[in-house]
Length: 146
Ligand code: CA2
Image 1: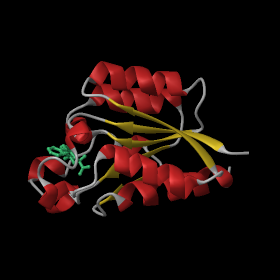
Image 2: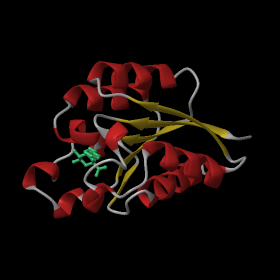
Image 3: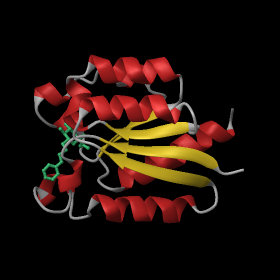
Image 4: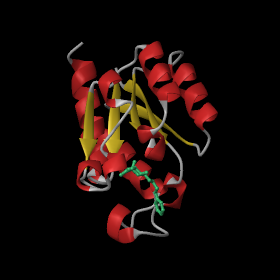
C-alpha cells in the first residue's frame, strides 16, 4: 500500500526559483513537488502544503495525524526559532524528516541551531532540490521498516 506523506514547506519557500538561485537553485517549489511525485511513483501518495504562517504549519502538522504516515518538512527560517513547531512535531508522533536545500551548517552561525532536529527521525541538508528526493526516499524506507 502507498504511504501517505505530507510535503510541508515553511516561510518564503514559495519564492524559490525567483531569487537567490546561487543559494537555493533555480527550481520552483512546484517543480520540486512534481519531481517528488514522479520519483515516489506508486510507493507514496503525496500532499503538499506551503505556508508563511507558523500557526498554519502547526495546524497542518496536527491535521496530518488524521491521514499521513509521515512528513517531509522544510521549516525554513522557523527551523532556527520555533519551539512551537518542535512541540507540534513531537506531539503528533509521526516520523518527520527535516529537509533543507542549503547546507545550513556551512552558513551563518544562527542557521546552525535547529529546534526541530531532536524530534525528527533524521535530517537532509545541502543537496538543493535533491534534498527533498533524498528525504522522501529516507522516509519511505523508514516507513517500510516499521
Ligand atoms: O536551506 C533551506 O532549505 C532553508 O530551510 C531555507 C530557509 C532558510 O531560512 C533556512 O536557514 C534554510 C529560507 C527559505 C527562503 O527561500 C528563499 C527562496 C528564494 C528567495 C528567497 C528566499
